[in-house]
Length: 416
Image 1 (tube, rainbow, N blue to C red):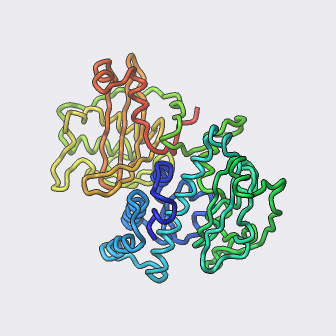
Image 2 (cartoon, rainbow, N blue to C red):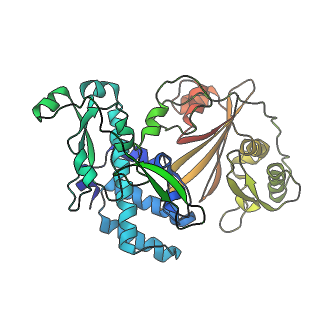
Image 3 (cartoon, one colour):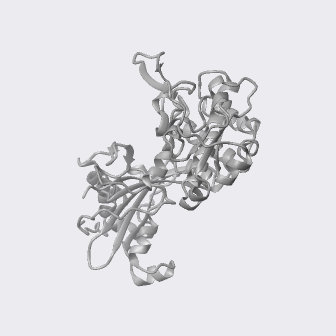
């Protein structure tokens, strides 16, 4: 099944939805549940290189309209290369990974389109259509032809996909569409009959859940809704949503804290400079390697190898940025923000990078950006943003230049 056969060709909102997801290693499919899938990409039992490569294969399927058989070839290559010992049969696992991700990203992309105010005014109704599977679910057949206002709460639990392998869809309709198709807008949604189910029942901690009758556990949510809701103004009550899509208006930077502009000694050797950086980040002098926990709780391996190339040669003094290692250490330890963003690299694979941002206080606007990914780390920029820099890159102000460094998903912001 190619993605073109399911939802026409992939479209911008579908690709945008999938690309902003964060890789989450899991043991079982129940570790990520319902709307958590709006923010997380997971393959049960996959982590590290397997998860990253599997994500890249799925993204290519979405972007290029690859078939299931083409995805299976990539799956086989990943398994052969990494030695991943997965559970379940190969055909079943590949179909679940491929179809579920393509369908849910399609539905989330459609929901993003349906959230457009002008479009909702023109087409205010939703139509449930059964997918026409050979072995239909009776409840899904019963829902075929239901027309309700798009803001009816029934859609929060019954927007497709509504189960493993479900091919049902939801369409927008105008008043004219309803009449032309001989349909009728219901005054009231069908009553929801809730059923008790148990997930994680093969492990030591089974979890009881309540789902609407006819919907598989884990599918009782509206795909992409948590992103759409993040754009909706609401009374201020508690902290704002953590995740922010790059395509949405960016939130303002949190107030920055002063940072001491302490330059590293010019006469220091590469080894001494690296150790000074490790001492500052680790908080204990003399540690050669350790796991550093950042502001989100993520653990990052830190060692002097960060400052060497793959041949073991020092790169710490490249472009003279070594003088600012103290500021980079502070940016990593105490950032104003942390963002996640996918970036294509020369190998053709997508790499998830964590971008730590610290705005420098002083006479001029300045910024320090520390970025780390599976393929290594780099400081993107660390300097005062002068008028010459602003003009060179086509921005109007220093703050506009700084804002351009804030890309991907914001997963952390300093509390005011």
